[in-house]
Image (cartoon, rainbow, N blue to C red; front, side, top):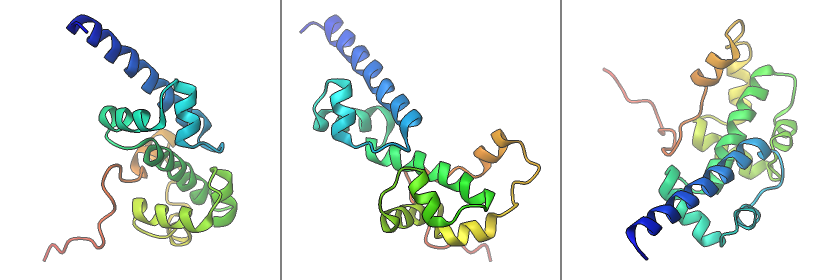
Length: 149
C-alpha cells in the first residue's frame, strides 16, 4: 500500500468514525452497543473500538455514556423527573450502572446532584448552562477537592 492510498484509507476511516460519533450524539437514548455501531460503520467491533479511541481519546461506550450523563444532568436540573425516570429517559437500562457512571463522571450521585442543582442554572442561557455543567471527560472526578490551605 502506498503512502497516498494509506492516507486515503485513514481519511475514509475518520469519516466513518465521525458518522459513528454523530449517531451516538443523535441516538444516545436508543439501545446502542458497540456491535450495532460497528455494523453501521461496516467495521468489526474491535477495529471500531481501537480506531474510535485513537481518534477521540475514549471508547465508543465511554463516549455514549458521557452523552447520556450530560443529558441526564440537564433533566435532573429541571427537577420534575425522578432519578429512575431520568435513567430510562436517557437510554440506560440499569439504574445501578447509571448511578455508578454518573457518580464517576460528575463526582456526586444523581440524587444528590438533583437536590444541589435544582434551580442552579435558572436564568442562564442553555448554551452557557451546558458548558458550565458539562461532566469531566477522559478523567474521572477527583475523590475529594484538593485542600488549598
